[in-house]
Amino acid sequence: MINYTLRKFKNRLFFVLCAVCVTIAVIPLLSILYEVVSRGAPQLSINFLTQKDADGGIGPAIQGTFILIGLTSVIGIPVGVLSGVYLAEFGNNKYAASIRTVNDVLTEFPSIVVGITAFGVVVLGIMGSYSPLAGAVALSFILIPIVARTTEESLKLVPNSVREAALALGVHKWRTTLSVVLPAAKGGLVTGTLLAIARIAGETAPLIMTVLGNAYFFQGFSSPMDALPLRIWRDSLQPYANLQAQGWGAALVLILIVLSLNIAVRMASRGRLRR
Amino acid sequence: MTNLKMSNKNKDTTINIEQVRPDAKMQSIALSAWFGSKQALKDINLTVKANAVTAIIGPSGCGKSTFIRCLNRMHELVPNARMSGQVLLDGKNIYGNETDPVQIRRRVGMVFQKPNPFPTMSIFDNVAAGLKLTGTKKGQNLNEIVKKSLQQATLWDEVKDDLKKPGTSISGGQQQRLCIARAIALQPEVILMDEPCSALDPVATAKIEELIVSLKHDYTVAIVTHNMQQAARVSDFTAFLYLGELVEYGDTRSMFENPKSEITEKYITGKFG
Image (cartoon, rainbow over all chains, first blue to last red; front, side, top):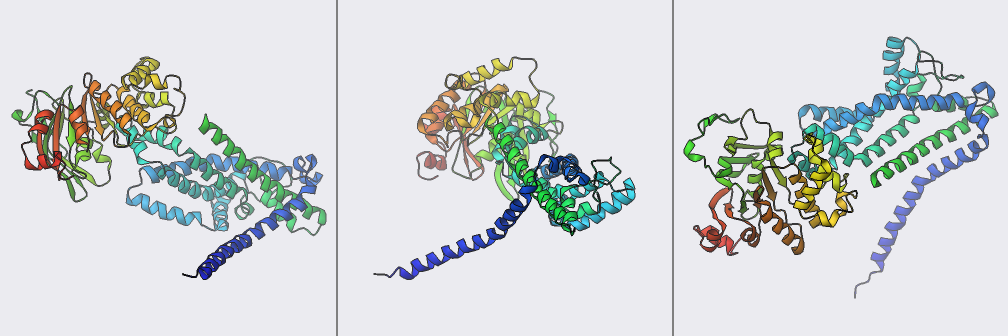
């Protein structure tokens, strides 16, 4: 008769170890969430969400963040998705292989460097001033590699038999990609794009050097603009308790925006898939 | 039949008129195919006769699928794949310089081993997909074509109330008939089938076989199968491939009753394969 006690013990030990590690990983996250909600929630009011800084609100920051998300999506998503399509569907060559490597490097590129680049090219060069466009360009640099990568990955998950089915009907390659492969990969595409948007919504460093920050609502494309991360950063440096509290409120709003964006798009794409 | 000078991507050749068979819908001449450095087909000369079912049998890896994929230029889509020789469709080389593979695939349809309906499309859209995506509606009534194609594929009665449901929501056998309907909707001249029943149960298989026999009135059919009973049941002519070479070709009955080659006899009596 073999004694299983030791084996059972080892099994148990391994299980406990994994559970402890997961807990350790989750503790900081929960603690941050708790802090943000408990300190930020009391700030929330219609006034706080809609008024400008001088009237005790973070309206300009919220507006700026939405403008940045919009502009960045318009610039970045088409470029990113089409790059991913190229890499997945036509990327059987050396050029694509090198693009893939560069893309991977760009995904992990320090965002402060991206900010300096956009500062040099757009702020100093093209616009001649701090500008929401410069911010959108900087954020696009961050968004494009992520979207390209996730697009490529989700297109590769579409079985080849589906492509062959369309090609064997005499459908052109571009039409197959557009009307058959992309729709089949829609779920992964939406999720990947969403993650990328969530990532850029919280970026701070590139914005410091491109949109700068502003205490007033949007003032045109050649003026500085505010954004939630910038507001959080500014408020955190203030010695006044009421401004610090507004910073916590802004942080909560930013988290809620990212979260609701996530849920909304997920529900929308699920609804369309069911049809 | 005089103007048969044709060029080929690999080499310029003139078709020898004696080689061209007038009763052939499709015909391969000295067809060889490779995957990288591995040769999958060796010098195949084979005829697919019009309005008949031609079965291509042989053990796994003998090149059956590669052969029919050369007949609608699907072979070249595999990375590192290449071929030499010619394939004639109505006496014209489909590998000629001016030939567009996309046009060839519209004339020579294909049904695959595993049912592969478009996952994001409804049953209706799956059948209409070929017409919509190739832009060949020509003002015809789409509803009529879809109905006719599904009827020809003997699927209409089973799905007529569920046309809006996803193409992947029906059973495997129904999905395969849906794929056949999708191919028929484009009104091809030839339908190639690559082991269309290997993923199906016996009842679904029987339905598809019945369908194959009925299809030959309007189309030319070439079917790859590793099931010899199936070849005997549905085909008029049979070709036996072994290790990339054509061992024997003849009308199905005499080939099964009286095979000329020893390997063929061994294979059809189940001694190997």
